[in-house]
Length: 615
Ligand code: G6P
Image (cartoon, rainbow, N blue to C red; front, side, top):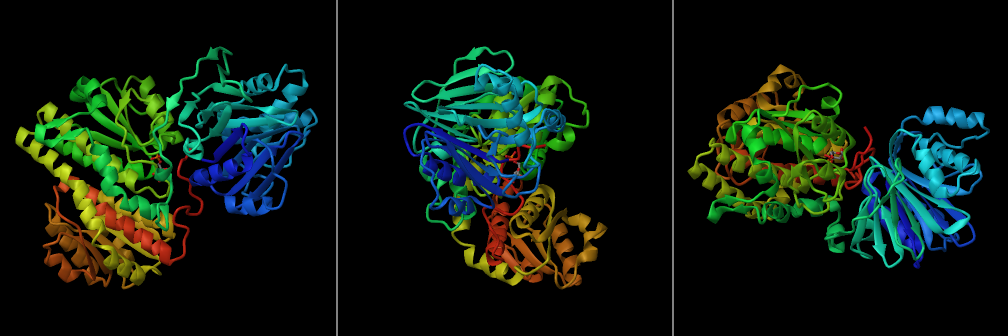
């Protein structure tokens, strides 16, 4: 959480910083700020609220200069206000710093600094760190980088930082531990950011700092990277970025979320491209093949994830258990890591993460790795921390997801996990060849089915959204592999429309939630024609008997459910285990339309952030 941006080069820093912040706003938007060195001194502006507020604040003010740092915040220490916004200045005003992460021992350091005569303006851990750096510097450190290094060796926690010095208009120091930081390189121009999106139009060359590394950037020189603890110099690996500017723009859509919902035919296709070869009867997944023996002999699969990715894990549980006959446990990463779980070398842990940066998921796999498990990643972001921490993996290739509420990342995760389960099931002998081939062909049809669905359901969904946009509660019911879809549908609605919503296994409704049902309660029921159909229809009758309003996801030829439902949304039929790839999509659309009607900020819902790098 929090986005950081920095620039050092020959161009004007301000527009680069502001554009960069806007691209990183998905990481937090409680406040924003920037500091620019104009060659003589540093000017800085900070403001509670979004980046647009900061722009207003800086309008008409001096902001020339070609060295600068900027920050968009998701508050951890201290309420979101102007004072707690970054950058933070050291007491003398010499150093300005931005920070993403948490300094855990900041309290003890703060007390020691107060004893040494420091006073603090803000409640943040960041102001403590920048003053610790100043204190060490004033004590006679040879250089800013040495002071930064010494300070970082005293702190515990997580950070990605960038710091500039009033007395040094040609240099910036950056460092990372636990929070992401990437430096774009372009002939002596340096772009610093939490991910590569702020500078993708300027350069495709990037160095991803590893945990425990810092870098010194000097005007017209090459980047110098070294290890914070051991002080050894590191030869940086220069990545070639494949990201395009079009991928991170709205492309005519009103919101990123809508664009990303509509991209799903393409993104699912991209997740399967080159891997799924139905006519040849093949699945090519290098990561799975490299660890084939581990999968074939696995005692169980443990999925660790958070949020929407956790829901994809639940879908995978049904698919893996059915097709590959491997027991699967799906764990909230945040619970798993603190539970001293029993893990053996015969366990395969699958970490699912769009961002690849979620702190709890990262910590969970580090722990499981130490205990000898094989760690497999299903991540969207290439080069991300989780992707790098795993033994092997399969990227989802969904493309950048900018809307805070996850949509296309979810369906891509499910597509990749389904493909893995089909491959492993066949190789373990639990999925017969004919079924295997049928699954490959059916999965291959999904992108076209998504395309067809997205072009037909719009008006119907908009009408339903208008009818229920002022409801205070929603219930989502599903059975089997569509139970996680109910959870995901409820989460989407909560996240972006702030309507309270709960997902439940349809049969569990009578053990509690049924008490909530009256004529004001919309109940979304996933009721496609499959093995559970009759049972779901009975559950719908129970809702109807209590005057609940039923919004049903039905198969095109359905007749029974339509008779009971107040509204029916048609979704094409596919194999039951693959159906979440389709049934999820109208639920995303419904949430989207309701949020728009309620006037909510769809792409940046309150209090949320897309990349949760705090625990
Ligand atoms: C945040 C996001 C969610 C996401 C979750 C896990 O809560 O708002 O959309 O599902 O983090 O993120 P990950 O990047 O690990 O999938």
